[in-house]
Structures are given as structure tokens and as C-alpha cells.
Amino acid sequence: MRFRYRLLVSYLVLIALPLLVLSLIYYRTSLHMVTDQAQQNVYEIVKKSNEVMDTKLRKVEQGTLALFVDKDLFRIFNKLDPSNYSELLHADRQISSILSKYFTQNEDVFAYQLWTSYYSFGMQRSLPQGDPTDSDIYQSAENAEGKIIWYPTYDFIRLFNQQWLSEIDIEYRYMFSATRLLNFSHLENSSIVLLNPEVERPVLNISFKADVFQSLFDDSIPSGSEYLVVDPQNHVIASSDSNQITNIQDETWLDDLMKAGNGTRKMKLNNERMIVCFDRSSVTGWLSVVMTPESVLVGPLVKTAQVSTLALSALLGLIAIIFAYFIIGRITGPIRKLLAAMKSVGEGDFGTRVEVETRDEFGFLLLRFNRMNDRIQTLIQENYEIQLKEKQAEIQALNMQMNPHFLYNTLNIMNWMAIEVGHRELSKILVDLSSMLQYTSRKDWKAVHLSKEIEWMNHYFRIMLTRFENKFEVKYHIDPELYETEVPRLLFQPFVENAILHGFEQLDTGGLISVNGKTEDGYRIFEVVDNGRGMNQDVIQKILNKKTTSVGIINTMERIQMAYGAEYGVEILSLPGAGTKVIIRLPIPNNNPPFQ
Image (cartoon, rainbow, N blue to C red; front, side, top):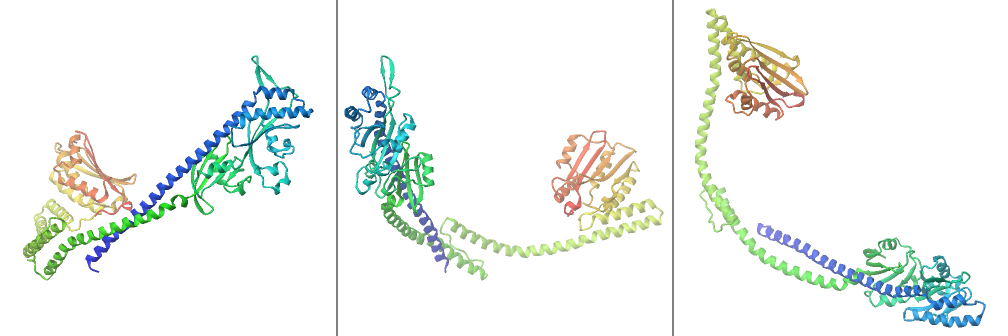
């Protein structure tokens, strides 16, 4: 495939991938925003529904509180004779009238009664209850001792043992109740008057049909949603599935919702992704839960989002293709020209030039190509001259190699001449000088054994002692095992020379140079100590900062650090009139590579 088409394909792929990613992000973001908004709306519906129900039930609760201090009920029950049936009937009419004042205005109240062991007072609604004092509702109210109890939805037939009603379709089959033990009292002449102790305290029972929740949720929650009302023990108070009413839901997720109290969740129920909105009643403590499938909320949007995303992607793709052809033409045009010119250059025509039409990177590339050809022509001319110079340099190097041999031969002749005339000291000096010259003129300047370095130093000291008429002496204190370790060539010479020329400048005799060597703390420590005139700290700092004119000292410090690292090197201790100590720190060979 030609570069032009490869570039086109690459360009389209680079465009297509971001378009695909952006389309997916746009699609998912749209769905997410709609889902979140719908989730919040459903949650607000659940809260409002709970608030409406709480308002109704709170009025009922307030009515039950008002009965505690109702004087007429206090008077009726305080004087009532339970054995007189006619008196009970008369009291029933009075009590029904009193209760109706508190509860008939609430259309959700199905029945309201006061239960005693001897009679059931109030609105009967033809409820064949038998003896209500045997029911769990009555027992719960007595155990609460005056606190209102919201008794969850129950099966009337089962609770009151009215099996004969199971064959009849009755409207009060499933109900829930608010019940409370009433201990009447009232205020008389600034004193609280209580019921006689022997008077039986009645239990108030207010019954509601379970379908009050159905009418509340059916008209408000989205179509396809399900609702569930449960108490803290997971008894189903109301449900969109009538078969679940009075059952116990053994679901851990319900426990989590009950602990949270209110909010929203996204979870998977029955293999379907659901948006769960829930809120707990502040009156009953019951939890209202609305479960809405995500597909119900986002279904209408999916098709619209898909169509708009595909249309936008197709439009952007078409625009990208048009721009691709235009841009690729601008890119490949200069490249084609450059390829043709390079073909000519490859055949040896370095005079080829390409016309530069643009000022962008391609124009700069073509301009550089033209300059490269100019430079190549110049280099071809210069190459011949360079080769001639290299030949001349080789000849000069060969000539320079002759110089050391000439010096060795000359020194050898001078040595024999000194022996012939009886100058033994001069002969020794010439031998030392010849040995030193052989040591320093070698091409190989790798590290040497310390023993070789000391041998060279002995030659040097003999020459310097002759020159300065034995004004100093030299002592060695070196651990024997260090003699076989390797050190850089001419390690001590610059410091020894500095001690002789400058340290002993004012001495006529008595100079002492000590060369010491030892191992300490994982290092090889060498010292060059003299008893010369010493130097001040400014001079020491100039030497350590390599601002001195002593090329040998600077060279030695740099060679040590280049070979072994920055932690190794030279330290100088000196005071005016107190001599100088030069400390050279080198690694132990087993821990570091040899000096190169």
C-alpha cells in the first residue's frame, strides 16, 4: 500500500476511534443524566406520598390523644355499669357520637371502636369480630400502656378467627390499625381527675383498609413500577402485588434500606436493573419502597439517542474524509518531490535541487536537503585534504616514537662515560633517570602495583636528595598487604614534589617526608606527611578547588575521582609552621573496579 493510502487509512482510524468513544460517552452520559433525573423525580414522589399519608395518620394520632382528656368519655366510663345491657346500648350511642367527631372527617378511616372485655363501642360497620380482646391488636395495646401502636396489615378472617367469611368477598379482608389503651382523665378545679381504679380501661382501635396505599401510589409512580410498604420487621403492609400483603419479606437489601431510612439505590432485582427509591414514615416507622426498572425510564430515550448519535457520527466522518484528502495532498506532495530528488542524489548527482514552495516543516526539510547537497559537495572536496593531513599526522607520530629510544640510548652512553671517568654518583643518577623515563613514557597508563610505584618514587627521591644535598630524609610506613594492590601511576609524586620545593624551601637540613599506607573503615588510606613550613587554609582551598597552578596535583585529584567516584579523593591538613599532611582515600580493590 502506498504511503498516501496508508496515511489516509491511519487518519480515518484516528478520527473514527475518537468519534466512537465520544459517541459512546455522549450516549451513556445522556442515559445517565436522564436516569438520575428520573430517579430523583421518583424519590420526590415517594417522599410526597409518604408526607401525604403521614399527614392523614398524624391527624388520627392527634385525635387519639384528644380522647384521653375528653370529659364526656370520662364521665361515661367512670359511671358505666357493665352488667346493665340497656345502659351499655345507651353508652354505645353516646360513645359512637363522640368518636365520630374525631374520625369521620378522615375518609381513609374504615372503622373506629373502643374495645372492652364486656362490650365493643363505636362504629361497628357490621364487623363480626367475636371477642376482640383475644386478638393480638388488643394485647399489643395493653402492653404499650397508652402508647399508640400501628399494627401492620393483617388478614381479618385469620386474626379474628372468622373462617366462615373465607368464602365471601369482603372489602375489609386486609386492614391495618392504630390502637391505644385509653386511661381517661380531665382537669377539674386545677386538679387532674382520674378514672376509678376498678374501671376497665378501653382499647381504641382505628381500622384502615390496606388499599389506601394503592390509591396513593397507583396515580403517582411511573407506569411499570412496583411499590412495597413494610414495617421494621419486614411485614408487608401494602404492595402492588396483592399476594404479598401480610407476608414477611426475608430480603437483606430491605434491611439495608430500613437502616438508611430514605434515599435511592441502583440494584439488580430478579435479574433486572432497578432504581429503588425509599422513604420511612415519621409517624408509623414503616418504609415505603418504589422499584422502577431502568428500561421504563430510559426506554423512550434510547432510540432517539441512538439515531442522533449515528447521524452526528456520520456527518463528522464525512467532514473528516474531505479534510483528509486535502491534508494528505499537502503532506505527500513535498515528499514525492523529495523522493525524486533523493533518487538523483543516490545515482551520484549531488547538484540536484528541490524548489521550496512552503514555509512549513516540509519546506524546511526541502531547504535542508538542498543545503545538505551543498555540504556534501564541500565535504567531498575537504575529504581529500583531510586524508593528506592524516597521513602527515601518522608520519609525525612515528617520528615521535623514535624520541624515547633516542633518550634511552643517550642516557646509556652518558652512564658508561660517567663510569669510565669514575663518577659513580652521576652514574647512579643517570640510571635512576633512565628508569623513571621508562616508567613514565609507556603508552599504557593503567594502574600499577604499589610496589612498582614505590620503586619509581625511590628513583625520584635519590635524584632529589642529590639535588638538595640530603636536606631531607624519607620514611615508609605501609602495611605489607597493600604492596600488591593497584594504584594510579604517579600517585604520590605531585605531593612529594610540593613538599620538597615549597615545604622545605626555608630548611637547610632536617626535612622529613613520611609515606604511610593502611586500610581503615573499608578504604585504603595513603598519607604524605612533611614537617615543612605548612600553609594556610586559603591556599588549601585553592588547591582543593583546583585553582592552583600545580597541574600535577589537579591531574591526580581528577584521575582519582574519575576512576573511583566522588567519595574518593584527596584531603589536605596543614597549618603555617606545622607541616602538611596529604590524605589520599582509595577503595579496596575487591569492592571497586581497577583504575583505568
